Amino acid sequence: MLSANHRALVLYAARMRPRTLLFALAVAACSRRSPTIEDAPRVPSVVAPTASLAPTASLAPSAPTASAVSSASPVPSGSSSAGTALPSAESGAGRACGELECRAFSSEKAAFLYVLATRPRVLAIGEAHAQKGTEGVDSATKRFRERLLPLLRARATDLVLELLLPPKTGCEQDKARVVEKVERPVTAAQRGDNKNEFMELGVAARALEIVPWVLEPTCSELRGVAEGGELAIDRMLTLIAELSAKRLAVLLEKREPRKLLVAYGGALHNDAEPLPGREAWSYGPKLKRALGEGYVELDVIVPESIADTDVWRRLPWVKSYDRARLGGEAILFAPAARSFVLVLPASPLVHPASPLVLPPSPQGK
Image 1: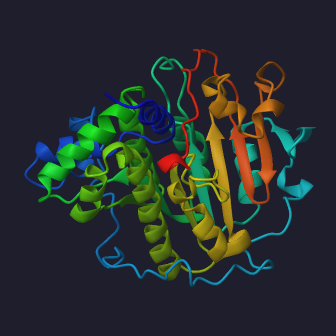
Image 2: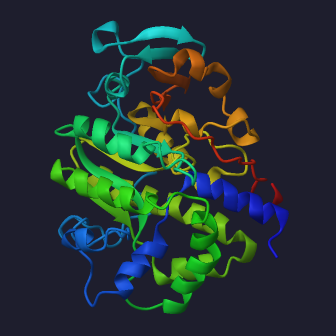
Protein backbone atom coordinates (compact mmCIF):
# COMPACT_ATOMS: atom_id res chain seq x y z
CA MET A 1 0.00 0.00 0.00
CA LEU A 2 1.28 3.44 -0.88
CA SER A 3 1.98 5.81 1.98
CA ALA A 4 0.20 9.18 2.09
CA ASN A 5 3.45 10.93 1.17
CA HIS A 6 3.98 8.67 -1.82
CA ARG A 7 0.41 9.15 -3.07
CA ALA A 8 0.82 12.92 -2.86
CA LEU A 9 4.06 12.78 -4.83
CA VAL A 10 2.41 10.65 -7.52
CA LEU A 11 -0.34 13.25 -7.92
CA TYR A 12 2.16 16.09 -8.08
CA ALA A 13 4.33 14.35 -10.65
CA ALA A 14 1.26 13.50 -12.72
CA ARG A 15 0.60 17.20 -13.12
CA MET A 16 4.19 18.19 -13.81
CA ARG A 17 5.69 15.53 -16.07
CA PRO A 18 4.45 13.73 -19.22
CA ARG A 19 4.26 10.11 -20.21
CA THR A 20 7.75 9.17 -21.30
CA LEU A 21 9.56 5.89 -20.70
CA LEU A 22 6.49 3.67 -20.78
CA PHE A 23 5.69 4.54 -24.37
CA ALA A 24 9.29 4.58 -25.52
CA LEU A 25 9.51 1.02 -24.27
CA ALA A 26 6.26 0.09 -26.00
CA VAL A 27 7.57 1.20 -29.38
CA ALA A 28 10.96 -0.41 -28.89
CA ALA A 29 9.31 -3.69 -27.94
CA CYS A 30 7.32 -3.75 -31.18
CA SER A 31 10.22 -3.07 -33.51
CA ARG A 32 13.49 -4.78 -34.37
CA ARG A 33 15.08 -1.42 -35.10
CA SER A 34 15.07 1.99 -33.52
CA PRO A 35 11.73 3.72 -34.24
CA THR A 36 11.87 6.73 -36.53
CA ILE A 37 9.64 9.69 -37.29
CA GLU A 38 8.37 7.73 -40.27
CA ASP A 39 6.93 5.19 -37.81
CA ALA A 40 4.77 7.76 -36.03
CA PRO A 41 1.76 7.69 -38.40
CA ARG A 42 1.59 3.90 -38.03
CA VAL A 43 1.70 3.97 -34.23
CA PRO A 44 -0.17 7.18 -33.37
CA SER A 45 -1.04 6.06 -29.85
CA VAL A 46 2.58 5.72 -28.82
CA VAL A 47 5.03 8.44 -27.97
CA ALA A 48 8.70 7.63 -28.24
CA PRO A 49 11.80 9.68 -28.74
CA THR A 50 13.13 8.33 -32.00
CA ALA A 51 16.36 7.93 -33.86
CA SER A 52 15.49 10.60 -36.39
CA LEU A 53 14.59 13.01 -33.61
CA ALA A 54 18.16 12.90 -32.34
CA PRO A 55 20.80 15.10 -33.97
CA THR A 56 23.47 13.63 -36.18
CA ALA A 57 26.22 11.57 -34.60
CA SER A 58 28.74 14.34 -35.03
CA LEU A 59 26.68 16.54 -32.70
CA ALA A 60 25.37 13.98 -30.26
CA PRO A 61 27.39 14.12 -27.04
CA SER A 62 28.49 10.74 -25.78
CA ALA A 63 30.24 11.91 -22.63
CA PRO A 64 29.44 15.48 -21.61
CA THR A 65 31.93 16.98 -19.24
CA ALA A 66 30.76 17.36 -15.66
CA SER A 67 31.90 20.97 -15.59
CA ALA A 68 30.25 22.00 -18.83
CA VAL A 69 27.54 24.05 -17.17
CA SER A 70 29.33 25.10 -14.01
CA SER A 71 32.26 26.50 -15.99
CA ALA A 72 30.21 28.39 -18.53
CA SER A 73 30.80 32.12 -18.51
CA PRO A 74 27.86 34.33 -17.54
CA VAL A 75 26.31 36.11 -20.48
CA PRO A 76 27.35 39.76 -20.56
CA SER A 77 24.44 42.05 -19.92
CA GLY A 78 25.12 43.96 -23.09
CA SER A 79 25.22 40.94 -25.41
CA SER A 80 22.47 39.97 -27.79
CA SER A 81 21.48 37.02 -25.61
CA ALA A 82 20.91 38.88 -22.38
CA GLY A 83 19.12 41.91 -21.05
CA THR A 84 18.83 43.75 -17.79
CA ALA A 85 15.29 45.03 -18.10
CA LEU A 86 11.91 44.09 -19.46
CA PRO A 87 11.34 44.81 -23.16
CA SER A 88 10.51 48.33 -24.23
CA ALA A 89 7.18 49.49 -25.58
CA GLU A 90 8.52 49.05 -29.10
CA SER A 91 8.52 45.27 -28.60
CA GLY A 92 4.75 45.24 -27.94
CA ALA A 93 4.50 45.52 -24.19
CA GLY A 94 0.75 44.93 -23.90
CA ARG A 95 -1.16 46.73 -21.17
CA ALA A 96 -0.60 46.77 -17.44
CA CYS A 97 -3.10 44.53 -15.62
CA GLY A 98 -1.99 44.28 -12.01
CA GLU A 99 0.70 43.02 -9.64
CA LEU A 100 3.82 41.02 -10.47
CA GLU A 101 4.44 43.03 -13.64
CA CYS A 102 1.15 41.69 -15.01
CA ARG A 103 0.69 42.53 -18.68
CA ALA A 104 -2.24 41.63 -20.93
CA PHE A 105 -1.75 40.85 -24.61
CA SER A 106 -4.21 40.31 -27.41
CA SER A 107 -2.68 36.91 -28.17
CA GLU A 108 -0.21 34.38 -26.82
CA LYS A 109 2.03 35.15 -29.80
CA ALA A 110 2.38 38.78 -28.72
CA ALA A 111 3.17 37.72 -25.16
CA PHE A 112 5.74 35.17 -26.33
CA LEU A 113 7.47 37.74 -28.51
CA TYR A 114 7.68 39.97 -25.43
CA VAL A 115 9.55 37.20 -23.61
CA LEU A 116 11.82 36.56 -26.58
CA ALA A 117 12.69 40.26 -26.59
CA THR A 118 14.58 39.66 -23.32
CA ARG A 119 17.12 37.84 -25.53
CA PRO A 120 17.75 34.66 -23.52
CA ARG A 121 20.57 32.24 -24.24
CA VAL A 122 18.49 29.40 -22.78
CA LEU A 123 14.71 29.65 -22.67
CA ALA A 124 13.42 26.99 -20.27
CA ILE A 125 9.71 26.36 -20.80
CA GLY A 126 7.59 24.44 -18.32
CA GLU A 127 3.97 23.38 -18.43
CA ALA A 128 1.34 21.78 -16.21
CA HIS A 129 0.48 18.58 -18.06
CA ALA A 130 -3.06 17.97 -19.28
CA GLN A 131 -5.16 15.82 -16.96
CA LYS A 132 -8.05 13.48 -17.61
CA GLY A 133 -11.37 15.29 -17.83
CA THR A 134 -9.99 18.18 -19.91
CA GLU A 135 -10.14 16.50 -23.31
CA GLY A 136 -12.25 19.34 -24.74
CA VAL A 137 -9.50 21.90 -24.02
CA ASP A 138 -6.36 22.19 -26.12
CA SER A 139 -3.33 21.34 -24.00
CA ALA A 140 -0.40 23.65 -23.37
CA THR A 141 1.77 21.37 -25.52
CA LYS A 142 -0.55 21.59 -28.51
CA ARG A 143 -1.00 25.35 -28.25
CA PHE A 144 2.73 25.88 -27.91
CA ARG A 145 3.39 23.67 -30.93
CA GLU A 146 0.80 25.32 -33.15
CA ARG A 147 1.04 28.97 -32.12
CA LEU A 148 4.38 29.65 -30.45
CA LEU A 149 6.92 27.17 -31.78
CA PRO A 150 6.82 28.71 -35.30
CA LEU A 151 8.08 31.97 -33.77
CA LEU A 152 11.31 30.15 -32.91
CA ARG A 153 12.19 29.46 -36.54
CA ALA A 154 15.57 31.06 -37.29
CA ARG A 155 15.78 32.09 -33.62
CA ALA A 156 16.43 28.74 -31.91
CA THR A 157 18.78 25.97 -32.97
CA ASP A 158 17.76 23.22 -30.55
CA LEU A 159 14.82 22.00 -28.48
CA VAL A 160 15.50 19.72 -25.49
CA LEU A 161 12.37 17.69 -24.73
CA GLU A 162 11.45 15.94 -21.52
CA LEU A 163 11.22 12.56 -23.21
CA LEU A 164 13.29 9.67 -21.95
CA LEU A 165 14.74 7.15 -24.40
CA PRO A 166 16.19 4.17 -22.53
CA PRO A 167 18.97 2.00 -23.95
CA LYS A 168 17.69 -0.08 -26.86
CA THR A 169 18.95 -3.30 -25.32
CA GLY A 170 19.91 -4.37 -21.84
CA CYS A 171 18.53 -3.68 -18.33
CA GLU A 172 15.12 -5.00 -19.35
CA GLN A 173 14.20 -5.78 -15.74
CA ASP A 174 15.06 -2.27 -14.58
CA LYS A 175 13.05 -0.73 -17.42
CA ALA A 176 10.04 -2.81 -16.45
CA ARG A 177 10.40 -1.86 -12.78
CA VAL A 178 10.58 1.85 -13.64
CA VAL A 179 7.44 1.54 -15.74
CA GLU A 180 5.63 -0.24 -12.91
CA LYS A 181 6.81 1.98 -10.05
CA VAL A 182 6.95 5.38 -11.75
CA GLU A 183 5.34 5.64 -15.16
CA ARG A 184 2.04 3.90 -14.54
CA PRO A 185 1.22 5.63 -11.23
CA VAL A 186 2.25 9.05 -12.56
CA THR A 187 0.47 8.85 -15.90
CA ALA A 188 -2.76 7.29 -14.64
CA ALA A 189 -4.32 10.72 -14.07
CA GLN A 190 -3.05 12.24 -17.31
CA ARG A 191 -4.88 12.61 -20.59
CA GLY A 192 -4.27 9.85 -23.09
CA ASP A 193 -3.15 12.24 -25.82
CA ASN A 194 -0.22 13.65 -23.81
CA LYS A 195 2.01 10.93 -25.18
CA ASN A 196 1.37 11.88 -28.79
CA GLU A 197 1.69 15.61 -28.26
CA PHE A 198 5.28 15.59 -27.02
CA MET A 199 6.16 13.42 -30.01
CA GLU A 200 4.39 15.83 -32.35
CA LEU A 201 6.23 18.75 -30.78
CA GLY A 202 9.54 17.16 -31.72
CA VAL A 203 8.36 16.47 -35.26
CA ALA A 204 7.17 20.08 -35.65
CA ALA A 205 10.49 21.40 -34.38
CA ARG A 206 12.41 19.34 -36.91
CA ALA A 207 10.19 20.74 -39.70
CA LEU A 208 11.20 24.24 -38.57
CA GLU A 209 14.89 23.26 -38.71
CA ILE A 210 15.12 23.23 -34.92
CA VAL A 211 16.94 20.12 -33.73
CA PRO A 212 14.85 18.19 -31.16
CA TRP A 213 16.76 16.31 -28.45
CA VAL A 214 15.64 13.59 -26.05
CA LEU A 215 17.05 12.48 -22.72
CA GLU A 216 18.99 9.20 -22.68
CA PRO A 217 19.34 7.55 -19.27
CA THR A 218 21.83 4.74 -18.83
CA CYS A 219 20.97 1.32 -17.44
CA SER A 220 22.75 2.29 -14.23
CA GLU A 221 20.63 5.44 -13.88
CA LEU A 222 17.42 3.50 -14.49
CA ARG A 223 18.49 0.94 -11.91
CA GLY A 224 18.90 3.72 -9.37
CA VAL A 225 15.30 4.78 -10.00
CA ALA A 226 13.98 1.21 -9.98
CA GLU A 227 15.61 0.52 -6.61
CA GLY A 228 14.33 3.74 -5.06
CA GLY A 229 11.27 2.28 -3.34
CA GLU A 230 9.01 5.14 -2.26
CA LEU A 231 11.71 7.54 -3.48
CA ALA A 232 11.52 6.18 -7.03
CA ILE A 233 9.49 9.13 -8.32
CA ASP A 234 11.76 11.57 -6.52
CA ARG A 235 14.77 9.92 -8.16
CA MET A 236 13.14 10.07 -11.58
CA LEU A 237 12.42 13.78 -11.19
CA THR A 238 16.04 14.32 -10.16
CA LEU A 239 17.31 12.25 -13.08
CA ILE A 240 15.26 14.28 -15.56
CA ALA A 241 16.78 17.49 -14.23
CA GLU A 242 20.31 16.06 -14.39
CA LEU A 243 19.93 14.74 -17.94
CA SER A 244 18.40 18.01 -19.11
CA ALA A 245 21.29 19.99 -17.61
CA LYS A 246 23.87 17.73 -19.26
CA ARG A 247 22.22 18.02 -22.66
CA LEU A 248 21.99 21.79 -22.42
CA ALA A 249 25.60 21.97 -21.22
CA VAL A 250 26.85 20.20 -24.32
CA LEU A 251 24.76 22.39 -26.60
CA LEU A 252 26.05 25.52 -24.87
CA GLU A 253 29.58 24.42 -25.73
CA LYS A 254 28.80 23.49 -29.33
CA ARG A 255 26.47 26.27 -30.46
CA GLU A 256 27.42 29.86 -31.19
CA PRO A 257 27.01 32.13 -28.14
CA ARG A 258 24.26 34.14 -29.82
CA LYS A 259 22.10 31.13 -30.64
CA LEU A 260 18.97 30.41 -28.60
CA LEU A 261 18.51 27.01 -26.93
CA VAL A 262 15.04 25.95 -25.76
CA ALA A 263 14.02 23.30 -23.24
CA TYR A 264 10.43 22.08 -22.89
CA GLY A 265 9.02 19.91 -20.12
CA GLY A 266 7.29 19.94 -16.75
CA ALA A 267 6.98 23.19 -14.85
CA LEU A 268 8.97 22.00 -11.84
CA HIS A 269 12.16 21.30 -13.82
CA ASN A 270 12.87 24.84 -15.04
CA ASP A 271 12.56 26.72 -11.74
CA ALA A 272 15.54 28.98 -11.11
CA GLU A 273 14.45 29.17 -7.46
CA PRO A 274 12.78 25.83 -6.59
CA LEU A 275 10.81 25.35 -3.41
CA PRO A 276 12.96 24.22 -0.46
CA GLY A 277 13.65 20.50 -0.63
CA ARG A 278 12.94 20.30 -4.35
CA GLU A 279 16.17 21.81 -5.65
CA ALA A 280 17.30 18.50 -7.14
CA TRP A 281 14.24 18.36 -9.40
CA SER A 282 15.23 21.47 -11.36
CA TYR A 283 18.10 22.27 -13.70
CA GLY A 284 17.27 25.97 -13.29
CA PRO A 285 19.69 26.89 -10.48
CA LYS A 286 22.68 25.37 -12.28
CA LEU A 287 21.88 27.13 -15.56
CA LYS A 288 21.12 30.37 -13.74
CA ARG A 289 24.51 30.31 -12.03
CA ALA A 290 26.25 29.61 -15.32
CA LEU A 291 24.39 32.05 -17.56
CA GLY A 292 23.15 34.79 -15.28
CA GLU A 293 20.63 36.87 -17.21
CA GLY A 294 21.04 34.56 -20.17
CA TYR A 295 18.73 32.08 -18.43
CA VAL A 296 15.01 32.81 -18.74
CA GLU A 297 12.25 30.56 -17.44
CA LEU A 298 8.72 30.60 -18.81
CA ASP A 299 5.77 28.58 -17.55
CA VAL A 300 2.94 28.12 -20.05
CA ILE A 301 -0.41 27.60 -18.32
CA VAL A 302 -3.82 26.65 -19.67
CA PRO A 303 -6.26 28.57 -17.44
CA GLU A 304 -8.72 25.68 -17.27
CA SER A 305 -6.08 23.67 -15.40
CA ILE A 306 -5.90 26.14 -12.50
CA ALA A 307 -7.70 24.72 -9.48
CA ASP A 308 -8.47 25.92 -5.98
CA THR A 309 -5.88 23.66 -4.34
CA ASP A 310 -2.73 24.15 -2.31
CA VAL A 311 -0.40 23.44 -5.22
CA TRP A 312 -1.92 26.29 -7.20
CA ARG A 313 -2.58 28.70 -4.33
CA ARG A 314 1.10 28.63 -3.35
CA LEU A 315 2.15 29.99 -6.72
CA PRO A 316 2.64 33.76 -6.27
CA TRP A 317 0.80 34.81 -9.41
CA VAL A 318 -2.38 32.78 -8.97
CA LYS A 319 -4.08 35.22 -6.60
CA SER A 320 -3.56 37.98 -9.18
CA TYR A 321 -5.19 36.02 -12.02
CA ASP A 322 -8.94 36.52 -12.44
CA ARG A 323 -10.20 34.41 -15.33
CA ALA A 324 -13.53 36.23 -15.42
CA ARG A 325 -11.71 39.51 -16.01
CA LEU A 326 -8.60 38.39 -17.89
CA GLY A 327 -9.56 35.08 -19.52
CA GLY A 328 -10.05 36.58 -22.98
CA GLU A 329 -6.42 37.71 -23.21
CA ALA A 330 -2.94 36.24 -22.87
CA ILE A 331 -1.65 37.25 -19.45
CA LEU A 332 2.04 37.47 -18.64
CA PHE A 333 3.34 37.66 -15.08
CA ALA A 334 6.94 38.25 -14.02
CA PRO A 335 7.13 36.86 -10.45
CA ALA A 336 10.92 37.27 -10.38
CA ALA A 337 13.73 38.60 -12.54
CA ARG A 338 13.97 36.68 -15.82
CA SER A 339 11.03 34.52 -14.76
CA PHE A 340 7.69 34.61 -16.58
CA VAL A 341 4.31 32.88 -16.41
CA LEU A 342 2.16 32.96 -19.53
CA VAL A 343 -1.51 32.18 -18.87
CA LEU A 344 -3.06 31.43 -22.23
CA PRO A 345 -6.46 32.77 -23.27
CA ALA A 346 -9.32 30.62 -22.03
CA SER A 347 -10.69 27.98 -24.41
CA PRO A 348 -14.33 27.96 -25.55
CA LEU A 349 -14.92 24.60 -23.85
CA VAL A 350 -14.12 24.47 -20.17
CA HIS A 351 -13.79 21.42 -17.93
CA PRO A 352 -13.09 21.53 -14.18
CA ALA A 353 -9.50 20.89 -13.18
CA SER A 354 -8.65 17.77 -11.22
CA PRO A 355 -8.00 18.38 -7.50
CA LEU A 356 -4.34 18.25 -6.55
CA VAL A 357 -2.55 18.50 -3.24
CA LEU A 358 0.96 19.73 -2.64
CA PRO A 359 3.24 16.83 -1.62
CA PRO A 360 5.75 17.04 1.19
CA SER A 361 9.37 17.71 0.39
CA PRO A 362 11.38 14.59 -0.52
CA GLN A 363 12.91 12.56 2.28
CA GLY A 364 10.85 14.45 4.84
CA LYS A 365 12.61 17.79 4.28
